[in-house]
Amino acid sequence: MSKIGNEGEDIIGRWSEEKLDLLAKYLKAYSVIMNEQKKSWLKDYCYIDAFAGSVRPRAKEDEQRYINGSPIRALQTEPKFDGYWFVDVNPQRVERVRKLREDFPNQIIETYQGDCNDILYNEIIPKIPYSSKKRAFVFLDPYGLQVDWETVKELANTKTCDIFVNFSVMGVTRLLPREQNPDLEVVRQINKVMGNTEWITQIYKESPVTQLDLFGNLSEPTLSRDTIRAEWLASLYTEQLRLLFPHVSRPVLMRNSTNSVLYALCLASHNQTAIKITNELFNRYERLKSR
Image (cartoon, rainbow, N blue to C red):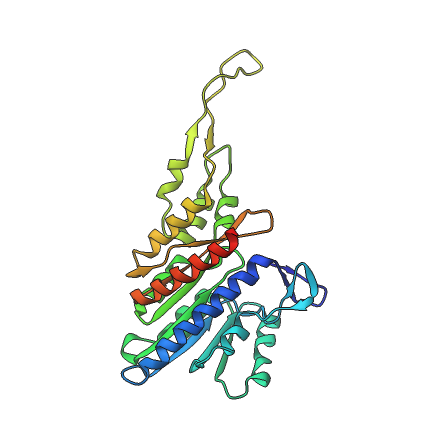
């Protein structure tokens, strides 16, 4: 989540920088492993960024300082990926990504403008079937709740894609009212993102009947939801991912300057070694944060 500066550039907080650092470290490890596989069975491997428009955001605490966004981090990874597929719904953001071809003229960069769910399903996934002997790393870093569960399912079904997903804990929590059951549209929206809403009814409880109305009658029982723990919601999402992918990392919580949880970052993969690497990265990150 970021705000927009006067010139249209993103302004991001410290947690977003830390997320990008984790991404870069994992991409390095991933690329080393996949490059080695090219000596035997692997044809090529690519990087897919479904929200790629934030190319050089500025730091929130110092807006004169530019930060390399996820597209640049991927393009700078060594060994290099065989291709880079960048998606964004905003045409101005896509144009910024296209200009990266000037800085990285020897790398194969493809750009797509449109909804990431449509682009992934109709244009990208068909290019990487299991029979192709290709592999892809997919970065899903939405601004909110833009990634459909059906899209995640299709990526999993390829058996060629690993996904690094930043799940919006805050986005889901904000949809759920405190003093009443959510309406059907909210339930539908959460189901579209998480693939499961059975847990929602469990968090709402009837409050005790202790109040009188204006006529001296007992008021009807009301519903109020429990406080939703971010760790619990993040674990729900990763458990859902485990229905699709054989290996899923534990989630790491991304917090803002007031220590509120905004997102939960995790990796879903078809390779157990990938999860081991990711969990080690997350453990180091949390140890440094706790100092």
